Length: 478
Image 1: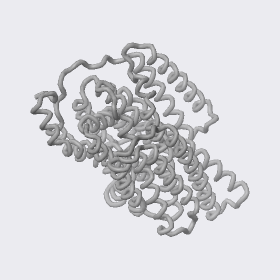
Image 2: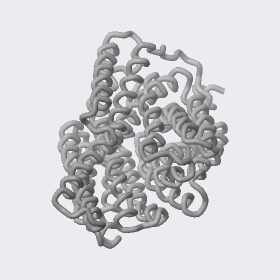
Image 3: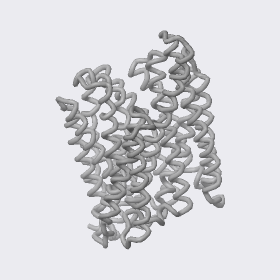
């Protein structure tokens, strides 16, 4: 039965919250994998015997495949249907995770991580498109995207906790194996509740645009991911970045000329969607960058175990869930994003400034308030931005619009990690140049470097306050 028939439409309406639950499970799996491996990485390194110089590829392989293939993944969802793309992505992700868990060597682990990124690039935009298509009522749409945004935002922190528990009490390989049962649950649920699409006219695939944007995003993500180890001034970083920018310019020029663009420029030029993409980019820079330093601060400075580190992130999870649901479901529909989004940006900036007051012997009580405020601010920003970025898009463009949301967040995350890491490394080196290289000196240098990163991220969110207040249109109160 097609989704366009009355019976199918009625069934889809009745099952809409089950659809969201199924998609939420899949989204949680994808987001978990961006952080769960971080805590398991030292144990994996000891087991497989790879070098410190190579360990970044376990993370970079996933980011490269995911970030560079998201747009084509979104367009494939438009071409062949979101349901098919979603289920294919789930099955492929599960198989890649099983391969990574059983990997006997470093090379096979990296290949498995790249395959995870590939299938995640197919799965993530399809999931977002399905949520957008399932919830048409503005009030329910806000609630659905609030829940979806809460899952997306809190998944990283949950991944840290799950990774800590599995690494400490089981084995690092379970950080890969855990995706298999999650994927099976989502596959079964998706096969039951997701409607088969009507076979209407599908958009054509833009071959040249696909090649240009995939290569451009690959070069940019590669440059940003490698900047930490190679340095911003290295030939590899500069040439990759320059080539990525050139290819991106060529892609934009081609999209303005071709009859069947991969990324119709109308998606980017809409003022509300453009503002939402900017907000997601800033949120990606701040969230991914700051969480990395918090992880090191908790474990290396305060001496927390992997499990304690994961538990320490729970305030972010709780307040992000609350902020996402309240913001997307109630505040933005009533007051509009022009008022609500700057508030979320400001709260996050304040929380990051708060983190600069932490020290070598700070108590968790001192840290707890800053983490809770950060989660609240990020929740207020992320969920409405995801919803508004996909609202009002033509049916043929929902997949690629959803992919663009994921792309700007992933590129923002890669840029945030590279920029803030480079800044922090410079601050630590400057501190050690005038202080003893003792154990206490090294710890103090690390804390100073974290503070510099927090201030930089806070400044970025302060800019986000101004941009969100100026770019979003004023909406009438409802």
